[in-house]
Length: 342
Ligand code: SAM
Ligand code: SF4
Image (cartoon, rainbow, N blue to C red; front, top):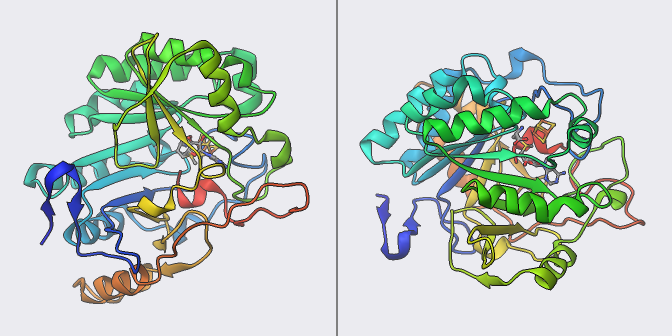
């Protein structure tokens, strides 16, 4: 049985060796994307053959098995989740768990390129919050970072999302020498529009065309700079994710920090991730994984799948092994963020 307990946390049937309850599933529904962000992908990516992907029906079955086992929050991500063909079908299927009360939240992380088309329908299917990744408000820099993206389309998407009633959170990867001078303006802009704002440290995931040491900007440095200008007050706000939040007194808005590099947040990790081929990663920063596609396809019932999930959760590691320094040439984890889903 899954039950809500005081304080909004939940009890799950999936409990790892360190006593952490797994209540949050992130699902990468595709490894493809219409952008090529410099910290995420190389320009010439080889994507999985379409035949290796789980169908939307299989993704529904897999997600639903996790909901049965105690997942209360589902986030669809990618690659770019909203470029997967007929993706609204999956949202529609999964929304039945919101209606039944089995799921607290169905949400999505997107680059915003398709939001102008889908925002209203996402809202009607029970999505209430979306995370939009946006690293700059400067047209030229946006092109340089995303390689293929268009800033105005994303800004129109954000407006459409807000008009549809979706709560938008902006996520920015802090990039040394690229957007570091713009962070205060982006905070003011986001808070001015009633949006939360979260900064993320770059993580060494997958080979890219650039050197990660050149990109890496510790958020401890950014935070110290912000404190010269603003008053940051620690607040207990939690969204079920790894961000730690402060309130910026001067803007009245919330500012989150996701700091896998400078401050390890693994002790409170409640998440696992599945890829679009049905591979379960128990930790974003480790290579250990479990194949769920074979047990999913082996029978129509969920017994095999459920056992495979239990076995995998029993191997959830204590924490990640990320390192970014000049001596470490290879990424800590060889797969790209677009495979496991951010
Ligand atoms: N395409 C969608 C998007 O950009 O929001 C969803 C997938 S994307 C992989 C999810 C998040 O991961 C984005 O906020 C992106 O900026 C972030 N990301 C990608 N590669 C990263 C890396 N190496 N380190 C830190 N964040 C990364
Ligand atoms: Fe695509 Fe998101 Fe990766 Fe950018 S961060 S390349 S938008 S998956």
